[in-house]
Amino acid sequence: MASSLKSKRKYHVFLSFRGEDVRNNFLGHLYRALDQKGIYTYVDSEELRKGEQIDLVLMKAIEESQIAIIVFSKDYASSLWCLEELVKIIDCKKERDLMVFPLFYKVEPRELRTPRGSYRDAMVKHESKYGKDSKEVKRWEKALSDASYLSGWPLKDG
Image 1: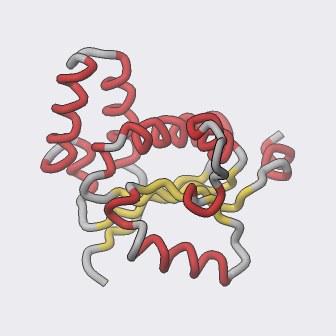
Image 2 (image 1 turned 60 degrees about the vertical axis):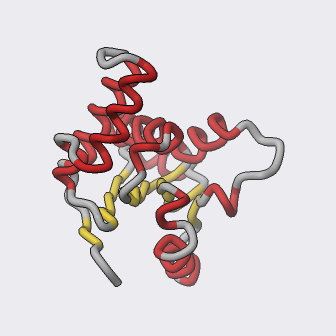
Image 3 (image 1 turned 90 degrees about the horizontal axis):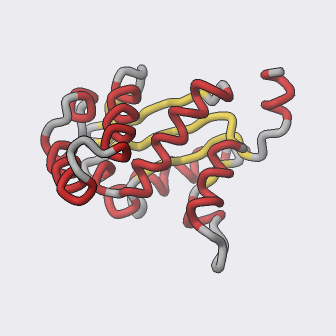
C-alpha cells in the first residue's frame, strides 16, 4: 500500500516556509540546489498558477509529495497559511507516510514547543482573534509541538 501511494506522488519535496523570512535568500539557494539534483520541488511561487484556489492547491501538493521540508523561521507561526500547511503536513506524516524534515532557521525547536519568543507572540495574536481554547489554536499548537520533536537541522547564519 505504501509503495503504491509513493508511486502516485507528483512531487519529491514540498517546501513549507514563511515567504517574508526566507524567500529571497535561504529558500532560493535551497530550491536551486534541489532542482540541480533533479529533485522536483513544490514551491508556491514557482508552482501556484494565477486564478487557482490557494488552500486547495497547497493541500493537494502536500498530499502529492514524498517529503516535506519545513523551514521554521522567526515569523513562521504568524502566518495562518503556514500553520494550516503544518497541520496538513503532520497529518500526512501520520496517515500517508510523508517524510518530514524540519529546518530551524535562526530559531530553536524549543521556541515552537513551549512556545517562546516570536512563536509565543504569534500564538497570543491568534488566541485573541480565535479564542484561547479554540479548535484552530489547539490544532496549530499541537502541530508546532509535534514538529518541534522531529529530528531536524539548526541553521543559524550562513
